[in-house]
Length: 425
Image (cartoon, rainbow, N blue to C red; front, side, top):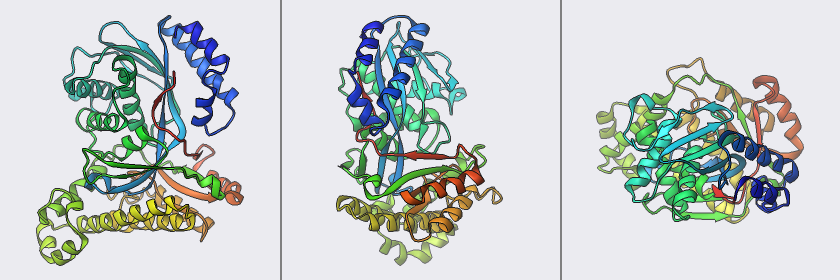
């Protein structure tokens, strides 16, 4: 729709139902102000045109910490915190992307080559997404976009994957008649992150964001992952899902993150497989003496043990969600957290033992919640956020405790939204 027509459509309630689902029935009228302001600003920036709105959620990993890259199982959820972008097709192959939080240089899609100087940048992701879609035979073209990011960098809800999947949906909406399905959206986003951005991530983040809802994923065949969606909400059981940013040192930890899949794959090689999902814990234990001699790294073996235990937990978590068994789910989430701390060892960077804000956050959650709720490291780990499931009656005290240690802006209280990245209009 052109600017004026789209503005009237929003004012008259044309997308009220979609907005309500995205924000989980919070104040729709207040949220509409955000949409209208973004549209007004895009019009001022780019002029008139056929504008569209796309919403891409953050994600919360419920279980399956670092199992995806070994073709295991995960449980995750799309959240009611999103990147909202208003976009229209642009001139030629030029991409003009503006975000309220940061500036992005114009990207010319006539050149889709990997640029070393763009590694770890938004430009790399734009170019990488376009390159992969072009390789797969999809149409690409320029666009003018203005985004308001609530999935902030360092927030622990996967800002890069949110951005990547949103980019795929822009090309999908503008140039491909909605032919790109959610699974392919996720894979294209992962490709851009791995190859162009330079981060060796698995597919969990992109898949949870692309599919949305409360989702269980089996990556046994990563080309055709098995996806199951469930209608489950912690809020329906008297709990709130809370992410706590522990404000650690966010200087580059890519080497720590990359070491996890690398070390696990070294163990897999000793078992004569590409990934641990193609072997078993029994084979690992049977060959443990020889594996220790070969890898000369006990941490790698502990990380492999974590995979096998965590993979089983993720399957059990899926069953608990399916049966609305919140007590079992919370117990499994806490066990996942302990395994990540003790075996996977991604709660603090080995290179900086004095930087343990995540561990401190977990200790505080343990002392305050005791046998109620759950708490665990969230996502890739090393720095960033912890995930907590807090009884509603204890939320105020929990909030005060975390604020007193990590600052008044450390908490994200989130809900699970029922769908993933989507073209709204």
